[in-house]
Length: 44
Image (cartoon, rainbow, N blue to C red; front, top):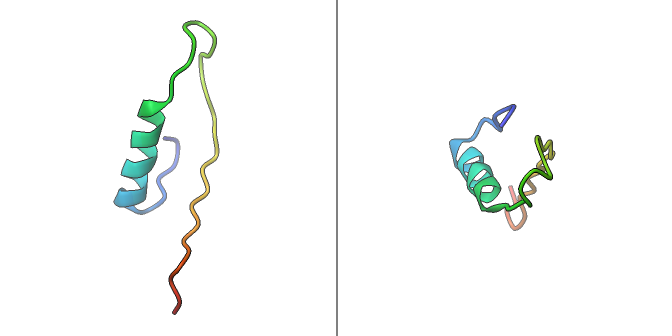
């Protein structure tokens, strides 16, 4: 992760999701994927 979201809960969820990704051996050396979080259902 290059930059924290500022929330340890969201950072952990993102890191956990990345760990589940699978690539074919030697097909990827580095992946840059922007992640956007959207909160729904909350009304303030």
